[in-house]
Length: 232
Ligand SMILES: *Cc1c(COP(=O)(O)O)cnc(C)c1O
Image (cartoon, rainbow, N blue to C red; front, top):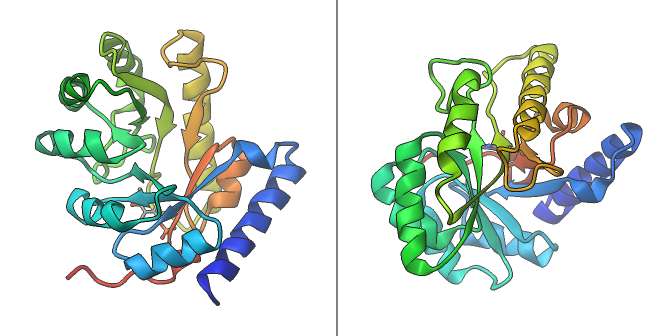
């Protein structure tokens, strides 16, 4: 299957699932996760009409962004060290993985110098998985409260990577819990737009469940680009 065909399959999957659950397919953004895939693959996707990408490594992303189509936009979805905040604040249209105040503050400092506002999501460790980054659900309100004073950051919603499981019901429960948390936080006016909160959840194997549970951003790699090459 070509990348264009895979994209077509996913777009149909999004449209069908949205329709079944009475959701507008246009309210669901597809991030093509291109980490470790070549520029050729990214260009093939843009030729097929896909302009939103997700990358996990700053250095790799920076090289790709230089040569990507001018309308392509990149979300950062990887773990981000505070000393990479300067580069990250320059490169991405959204950073989905803000999970601590120190990082938020250094992003804000660099963005002030650039006179730029940046959309961010808070990464929540919804399954309390010790191997995953993300703020714990109980501490998310406190983090968003602290971020209120950082004027260059626009917290638009939440992102999560649930613990890996073969049990799709478990994934569903985690997605549902993220949504419930987001509703609670929106009631406290903790987002930049509390009427329309973004939920980034769902990957190749579980994106339909995520859409059923309210995802507005899904992040798909393997089902678009195929198996990832090993890191060299
Ligand atoms: C790699 C990655 C994805 C894509 O995973 P696939 O299973 O290949 O679709 C999505 N989200 C994050 C945070 C990732 O690191």
